[in-house]
Image (cartoon, rainbow, N blue to C red):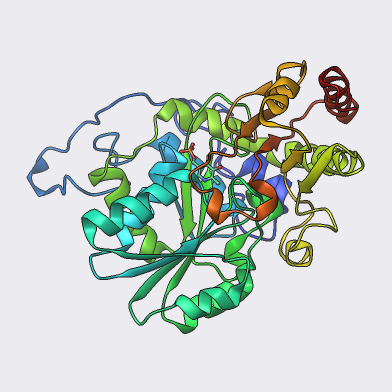
Length: 397
Ligand SMILES: *Cc1c(COP(=O)(O)O)cnc(C)c1O
């Protein structure tokens, strides 16, 4: 007995539960086994095999079944034709860049991106591999148009962008990229496919750090690229087989399990983050709050036009306080933990001080140091209560 739940005729929740979760062919189990083997039996005459072929049960770096099941689910949730799952979000991003770009090509990318994107594009690909790169404020689509060149192959944006929650207009930038003969990739990690599906808005690739919302439990790393098969075939072979970014079957299995509850968790993240953002905005000791769901966000209208039903669980805010007071505030928190990462079940906060080397790329309100706050799944009252009691102990309230 087998079941196949694909395609838009099924709702997001149904696809999250079923796609890729077929009955196991060998045992009839309703959960597929974790296949931890490195190697697979060869045919009678192996001399015709292509050792570099991806997606084949040959050697686990070429492909494995747990990875394959997760790819089916993520392609379905992102409304994409194909997906490659890799060992981390950064493996997905580097796999995308190294597979698609070559010396002499030009890339435009958001001034607000995950730090490894900045290192890969701004420090590695341009200096060592002669790929031209331009950092642009992509919250203004016209700024993207101005820096396009005849050799622009890729525009890479992150929206909402880490860590200052900048929002860029996916539809407008897809139009500009395609007019210039370039492809558009969108890092969709902060929104997750529940709140935003870049492929539906005209992007060519949606990139996810599965480590964050899609796994959601803070216990496994992974990354994914979703897009058209004709590109994904190339990216899969390069990023997985030749660059070696393959995911562990166990982590693929864990992320598969986490992804089932993505829509339920995202609803609580969306709701808790909006309530927390509104609370923070009401406090006189808070200098600013950046959250796409607030009317005060500079690109709120764009966020409303491309994110639904919510705006994710990550916000940024500042305190009217000196450097040490920010650290004291964090030290008094009891529910919220000081740690990097985001999209876990628990609330995580990180103080990004005024010495950040990319400060010059951020809006001025961020220059005195700020918090990136990943609002978790706890009761909103407890999250807000924790902030309140800590501000009181710090002497700010
Ligand atoms: C965390 C993150 C990444 C990197 O993902 P890893 O799984 O940590 O390698 C990429 N993009 C964004 C927006 C992220 O938040």
